[in-house]
Image (tube, rainbow, N blue to C red):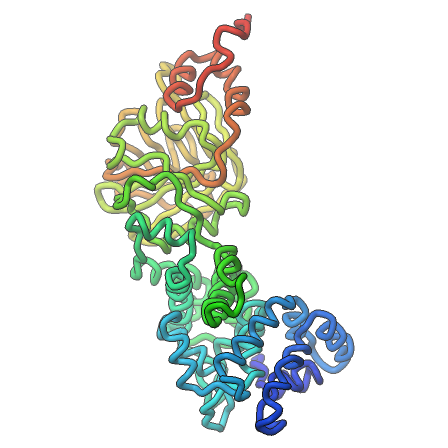
Length: 500
């Protein structure tokens, strides 16, 4: 069994890398506390850290040094100034002051882990936090490799003795508390993206976040009631989504804890750290009846291609625009990538991400970034198998082809099908287009209780869309009607020649 490195071991491996980090009065005497701060975090700066890494080659692993290598000068200044403020330049922060400063920002379960990590010293009762541990918390949580992130959890599970196993339920609590803390920090910081969602009544669904936590850890839960260091570290190797959220939590925490006015760029830096998209198009609907919670928006957004994560544009809701297939099509065609969310009469909540603009035609479109998902009664995501390209299909008023909207599968065996006669749909028992697929709806043939559609990413260029529709317009007059329904003018109408 691999044992987590104890703090002394970490120091031994890196030699001078951590020597002198925020040395307080105990090392230099009361009069030297302030003088220590200008050089306190120098060992974490890029050049010095790189030199330290090179100098320790042959003296054990340098994996932890790699985290220090990528801390920017701005980050080092941030951590240094916050420690100085919270310690009142005394060289250490009282344990109770950590609770005082951070209880408003962190979920209680995560706060307990953090305090135990900061005070971790097996065999001793620690009542104050030194600068070394305060700096390491930021390094491990924001820039940590899998070993360091694992240490953060195991040292935070027990401060007075070294633990090499953790109950699975405690690990799940840590995951859920981190997600809850991210959303709480968004609120406390007044982040612009967060406010665009909270202002329309979108709230945190705690139960669904608990479900999401279990989904994130499904590869660990199979090990049973207790998890080892090796198992958790292996999980972190592939847990990209959680690591992203964890990193943002502690970046936000150190930013929002700054004294007001201490850094004029703090507000801008907070608003630059966005995992939630900007919500657009609902400015005049203050109480939008969405079936999505803030946690759902967060995780769906993190599943999208990076270039589409900055904004969501409200396109359609059956409760706002009425239960009409043609109305829905008129609002979603040629709007770029979209997310469709449905609730059936059995209260199953599910949907899909469509990578391409919806267009009428007999052919399948879309690409392998498309996926289907379930949000109730369980949370599952189904990514592409690359077995076929049946990602999107849309047709209307055709005698020889099915009329409706499809995502995945075959025309008679769809992953998700919405019939052109609004109100009915189908989700087959199997679908070869998406991995590990299971039926989305409560019944294979379902009735729609609620439907909403969001455009994700920037609005596509209108003229480019019109050019792409040119051949379709020539073949199918219905497409011309749908183009007009979408609000796009036919600038070329009457100018271009008919195709022979």
